[in-house]
Structures are given as C-alpha cells and as structure tokens.
Image (cartoon, rainbow, N blue to C red):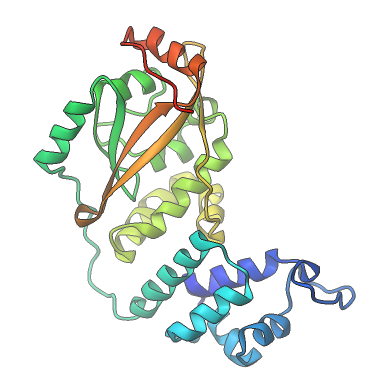
Length: 276
C-alpha cells in the first residue's frame, strides 16, 4: 500500500523529462518521466531505498533525505513545502487509529467581527476541508443563484465536484478543482482529510480521487467567475491563515475596473477600486 509521500515523489518523477535536467535520453521506455536510477543518483540514495519510499515501505525518511529528494526533483517552494508536509503526515500515519473527529466549525467572535468590518466587501471563512463557516453579505451576493450556499452546511469542495452548476460558475473549473483537492491534504489532520474523503469520494467519483492522489500544487492565479446574471468577473484573492483554528479568511478583490463595475451593479454596492 502506498503513502501520500510515495505517491507524490512518484508522480513528480513521472512528470519530469530527463532532458530538462540535463540527463541523456536512454531510449524508449514503458513508463514516462525520470528513471528511478537517475533520481536516486541525483538524490544520493540507493535505488532500493527510493523504491521503498515510493511504494510506502519506508514511512520515515530523514529530513536530509526529504531535502535531497526536493533538490533532485527541482521542486519549487510550494512543492517543497508540500513534500515536507507529506513526509510529516506519512511518518505519523501508522500510529493514527483513533476514530477521526469532524473538522472544527465554530468561528471565533473576533473573526466574525472582522467580517462585519469588511462589509460590504466579499469575504469568507473556510477550513481546509472546504466547509464555509461564515461570510459577508457581499459573498452571498457574489454566489447568489449558483447553489453554493443552498445547503445547511455548505462545503465548497463538495460543490465543486458534485454540483453541475459549479462548472458554469467557475470559468477555470479545472484549476479550482485542483485547488480544492490539494487543500484536503492541508486539513486539520490527516484523519480529518480521510473522514471527508470517505464521505465525498462516493458521490464525487473518479474525477475527485484522481486529482487528490496526483498532488498537483495549485498556482492560485486570478479567479474567473461567470455569474448567473451574466457578467464575467475577475477576482484576486488575499488569504489570511487563522492557524490556531485551522481555518482561513479569504477576501476577494476586483482585479480590473470592469469587474469592479459589474460587482457594483450586482449588489448596488459602493464603487470598489480595482487593484493594479
């Protein structure tokens, strides 16, 4: 049985063409990407040890080995952070047998006060599992008619993968789907991630499972939305991590003047200054 760490290392190895690392092409091969022997050599470890990591038979590689693999795979900063995080949860996975508890859903009073101060702006508090815990009226206006807030306990991840309206609402649905799947790995604990995926996977299907297991680190560029009333919107997201709560506060800002005008018409709100 594999591990998240092994899956990520193997997926990155398969995605790398040898010539991009200055390695010679060794002829046709059955699987794509970088050979194990080449990655092991670059990382300064044995092929046997690399195989054990990829197959999940070694769950506790040292910090030095994890850093060597990051260097050998030429990971960027976000990918390095993800690799270290997966090494951490993989190492502790074998001791996690307690029944998983649901993710925290209460929002601190000071955070709710912050949302009130942000009105009539567009802001939302979520946890890493996609639960929408609190939001401004501006966020409700933005998502009105999309079905996102229809449930008693709305969840953005479930909406993206199970509601057909999400594919129309998010102009770059594939990128948003990658973001939501990736964020499950950053849940309050690996147990909570497993708790949600056990509930979500049966209804979300293979599209969700495939994205979750390939560990694509999202770039989180401009968010493009197609509002049901017609206007296209381009939004920039500013995220404040509420670390002690395992939550995040996301503020949405118009990325251009046209979006600012469209938002003003949507909510008859005061004019918002586009960011440059």
